[in-house]
Length: 600
Image 1 (cartoon, rainbow, N blue to C red):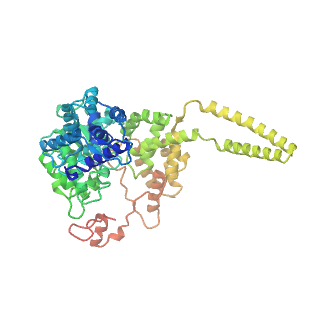
Image 2 (tube, rainbow, N blue to C red):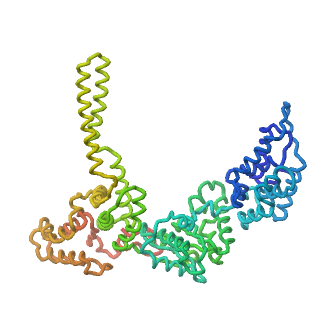
Image 3 (cartoon, rainbow, N blue to C red):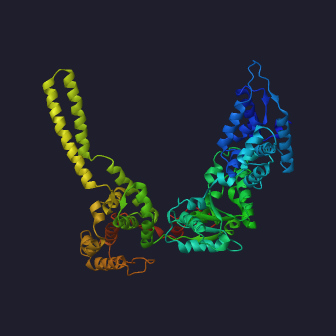
């Protein structure tokens, strides 16, 4: 039997078993050497089989080591190795097992099943002591192998591919590692409705970054664990596919396709028990598609079309239009579910649900005012990100800042501590120079400073107390650092600012009382919640000759609302006098050069 009949991992196990023979100074290569080498394979299938059977692989290793320690050693210089009839029979049984399973090569699992068929010897005794027999090993092997066949010498790398290249969200929900999902019941219900359809039952979550698309998939996993789903979704697993793991290390042509194919095969052989979550779904288009190869999206299409693979995608609207909609064969297999940004009230509920987890992580107390400030200030001053993500970031970073500040000395105490160290060094130097009078002066000053330090430390402990608190001021400090807006302006109540809005605008725009009053009344009405939140605050047309303050009033309004007069989009309509210049505003028409470039 030549080495070419074995897979690479099986060849590695046989080579290691021969090294064990030499290390133990044995003359006979036996079943126990091979069995120990099989179990010792790092993250190998034999180790996983024993774990599946509830047997600790370390027990088997220690038992085999004890057995091999009792075998007589050969002390002669030439250590010639002889294969035993038992091992020859085991290799023959492994070959028969591979043929019975219609495998082209002998793999490590064939060797393990053959070892379990031994009815005599130390290995058979060890199996009996552990309560393991051939049938149990075979059943565990079939469960782990699934529908895979050993058709090449690297076949073992395809086993448990789904486990290697994905994260089980339902398992994370079972052990309580997922954050609670609040305010997304309607979207989760839409996802469940789509999943239970007969055809086109693959939802894709479309929304801006940070609005909570991934949280909806996690919420579905949590509902599956709580049995709060339709009967057709009971006992399903939501597996988040990690494209980074799939692509990483795939150096040779066809290696990525082989990995993804093994994942697809494992999902299809699960009889619908697995739902694949494709986060950042647009990365599938072109992933792994080197010269002459298929990309990930084209490999998924057949399984999606046959209904053998059920998936949940998530992507932003821009990426969906740019990558998914351009491939109609891929787009028609997914049903869009649009995820809108939550309102400030909904974001407040989300942060209140998450607050206990962040308090436990940072070991602080987060006040209700801090949560309200995180939502209010992030919604008002951070315009390039979405709720609830930006508000959660403020709450998280404020907790981190308070915890770090508590572990550091204030600047005043830090200076006193540095002076104490300096006095200690000066005292030692004076003693070395026999200048005892100066050393006594340094000692007196050092003792006085140590007394002050002790008093300051006691005062800090008394005022700080055992609990650290994150309040509204901490959130305002963070927003000020991010935006450059003074803290006092952030802490000022909005109602007070709106009451004095006309005074603020009159400081920049002189004499335009009617226009300023109309603008101020509209802004106050919008801020009080009397208008439709889905409609603009107001639309104004400022009419008048050049230089009377039309543009200046717009800048003053932007500065009042957003603390930055540049927080406005300015369109100079004199630049759009010609018919063709409208493309600068709305983008180039279809089938022309520059059609993929967004409007300026």
